Amino acid sequence: MNELALNSAIRYGFLGLRFRVQQPLRHVSKGLQTYTPLTLIQTSRVLHSKPHHPEHGATKDEPDLSNKFKTVMRNVPHPLAVIASSPGQDQSSMPDQTPEAMLVSSFNSVTASPNPYISFNVKMPSSTMAAIQSSRRFTASVINSSHTADVFAQVKKKDKIAWGEFLQADGKLRPGHGGVAWMKCEYTGDTSVGDHRIIIGKVLEAEVYPDKDHEEAAMVRWHGLYVNAGRGDAV
Image (cartoon, rainbow, N blue to C red; front, side, top):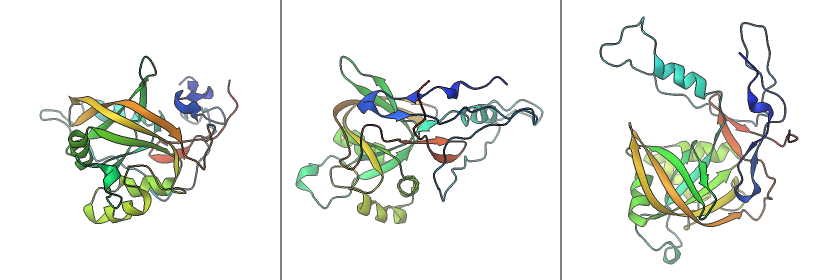
């Protein structure tokens, strides 16, 4: 397979944040080539996809497009973000409230003008999605901590207790808890695709967390790992 174009910088224009690889990345093909991996941060958790079950009527000899698609997409770095929202309540008047929150690996900028918009995907059902629909507001935080990613990847109610240690009532991450930048967004709509929904948000505010800078490397999901893209030289 030809050398992937990940040699060039992976950039996201908002806030000057950049997702970049430090060194060229080549695909491994029958031992003929090797690759230099992205700079990895220490992580305690590997994300695993649920086993795919062929559709009714498919045989084991037929190509499994779903699994092939997943294999291809594992080669593509996906930006991570924590999405948080409080259901239909005035967050400023409830300092002790803990919002609903989730980790997404589909955070994306849609457009910067005339108004900035972002998008992300969520698998249904989702308590965070219900909160977003109720309040019409949410906060998106780009992160650079595998521990933070682990905490918000949990979906069981008993695991949500730790969220209060990480989140403020307004949905932003507390200082020193892995946030790179945050955006306050207005929920403007969604569209259903299979068992997921694509959420669109209009950006109302956008800032880098006080203890970070505009060049801070954010985190992506790549080959089932949490990966810090580092600061490679632009090509």
